[in-house]
Image 1 (tube, rainbow, N blue to C red):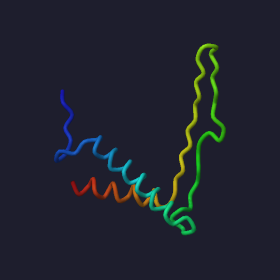
Image 2 (cartoon, one colour):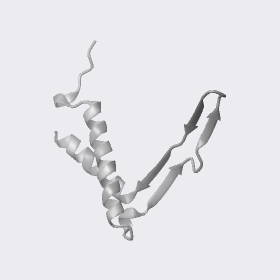
Image 3 (cartoon, rainbow, N blue to C red):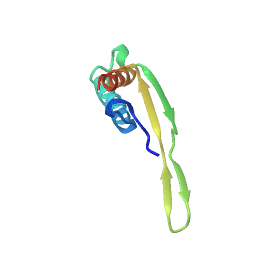
Image 4 (spheres, rainbow, N blue to C red):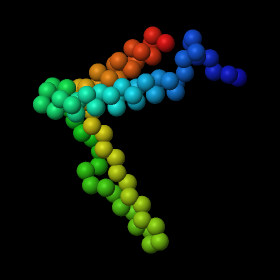
Length: 84
């Protein structure tokens, strides 16, 4: 059985367009740090998590910052995806 996607669209192109929207939106937000575009919330681990197994040390850390500019970038990415 094969999955059918409409008009040549697939989930990878949607994912890549959303990711590009987040990156470009974050970049635009960093260009204008004192505007409303850079307003947002940061989620994640403030301190990295260390797992020491004796011969191997693993460090876990993840922080996500969602800003107005990144939300606009996601919206633009989805609009472009719908136009494809």
